[in-house]
Image (cartoon, rainbow, N blue to C red; front, side, top):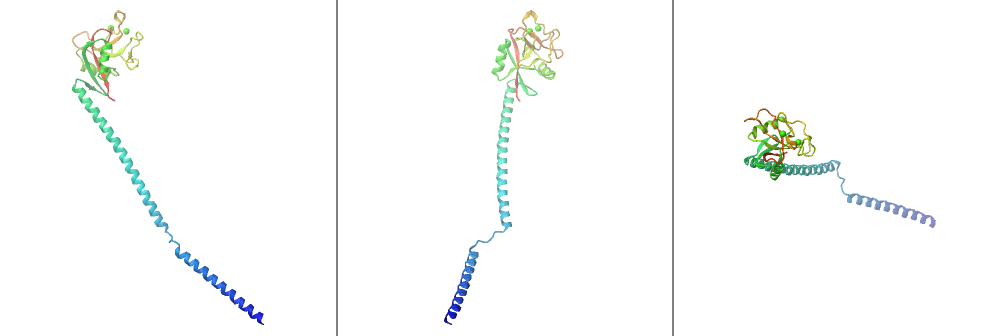
Length: 221
Ligand SMILES: [Ca+2]
Ligand SMILES: [Ca+2]
């Protein structure tokens, strides 16, 4: 009988322990739940992401604007400088046509010396690429024969411009080039057999050492 009572007491103790343990675990769980930070909503996260993206976009746009502004300013300053140079050169006797300016060297010198004078001015003897350019030369510098940047000094009869390009269209006076005397290797423009230039064909081949004025060309672009 005494054993039976002990058994009942043990069962009651065990039940109490189980209940106590469950309460304890529940308390831990509750405590844990109360300490856990509140869940953030997906809407809040999305707003923050949008804000970050907007800031990055603004920074990117600002950078692009700054780069474009610096580039624009540099190009504007360069154009201003070129314009001032052009105006200054024109004031000193240069004439403008298409993308070049031209200058008439008035000292009479050999073809090579005249070329050197052009190069000292940042130019070279003129290269004539079109009928319009030849007409401009005839009209602008009508008073005298003048050296141009054309020679056949390397191979007789093979005329080349100073930039190495072979002559395709020439504006030779009738009967020229005639290699008169056997050593006419430099070309001049403005050749005429009367008081005025008639027509566009005014070139003549001449001895390179004969003193002549010359026409320089400075290509601007
Ligand atoms: Ca010749
Ligand atoms: Ca000739």
